[in-house]
Image 1 (tube, rainbow, N blue to C red):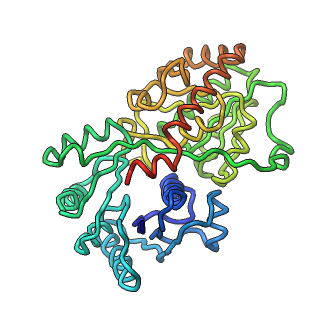
Image 2: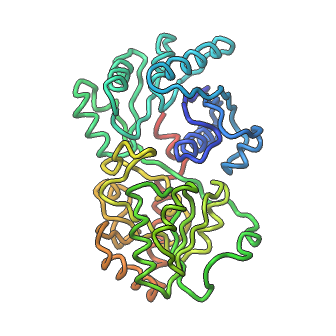
Image 3: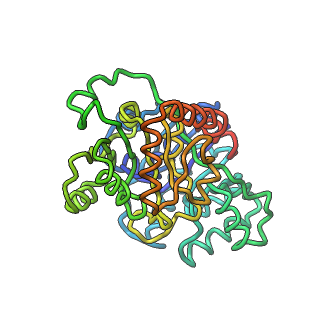
Length: 371
């Protein structure tokens, strides 16, 4: 099957949405489909460099467009026009897939089946109107949502949309690739004899970095590692005070993240009750399905995660993770002390999480479920 994925992601970039788009395109291709990704050009790289940057196979086509810096409807219109113009030069696909409703709306008149994926409810009247229009097209196949809570929200705001056309499919991850990692560990920050606790991801408001700082203060016999984040975010957190056992590693290429997992005994996901998006404009906590959690599950390490309703869709307390009240620092301290002492519990949680990941949450499984 020929799939054209219409995205407004910048490829390559440091954003989670660019990782998501690249990974699902690779999964579509691995499942035997012919895939072309439409995206905005990001950092200057060759296509081979882009695939290496994300740690994926060169198995699908990427068509990059000059980034438009115009916001709102005008920017969406210009970018969609560029895509439609380019589509006239090539055969049509069997399916248009995408997370960018404006481009999908721009190709709806072609009569090709459409699948639209959403990660949050519409955050403005224009987007809501476009989504409503798109979902009413005859060639609209389905709406893919990343959590059951988001599915319920769309049933509420679009009550006329048949519920069978709204499909819940959580995000996914790949199994870490086997590679020589010795050069990553030379000069690795921390003390080998200490219990190693890791966090991987952005440092936006609501990601729980304040919890990690408090834990580092409370547990000086453990080393805490924060992998990821923009330079300005790291600088802001470092200004809050020096903690000798807290290490900021900065941004790491997506392809290199598994090398850090191997150094940690436990992985943290201390999401707060409000988790803000890029730019701090939206609270994603009610419906998120974090890529990080699935990468954690694939890593074979024990996970300590915030106990939020949407995350209980993925993890089960004491079976494949320890789920902790987000703001209860004493409970976080207790959980880490328990895991430090109980290696059998760490191993049990890690094995169970990995088994669940392999059964339900690989990118290839996800790619099959969304189509």
